[in-house]
Length: 112
Image (tube, rainbow, N blue to C red; front, side, top):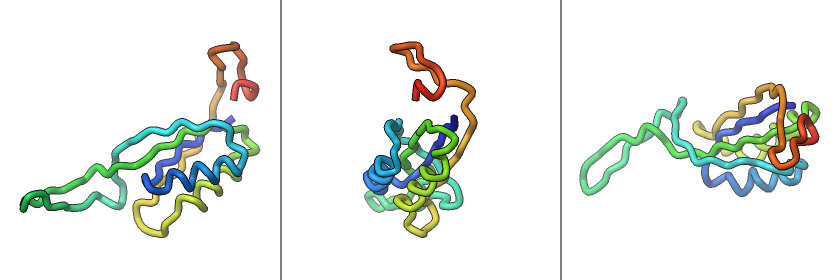
């Protein structure tokens, strides 16, 4: 099993959710996060005062899938989340040693 963490733009969430559903993903966790990478933030003006916004709002998706689904899910996120500009986000894939469903106690792929 793998855990896919994807950091995407806010306005791409609906597109990415739709693409993940089409790819066969049955569950995701969505979190609002803040951060920066190459984009490095930007400056804004509020009431005549300029200030720097260096932690930009993003959406983080956590998805757990079987090893055979990683490529399909990653491609779906890329296709739906890409704008072609700096700040589109990142995808991180990590190994999971186990998953346990709290309600039933199921473990492994059956718990996903």
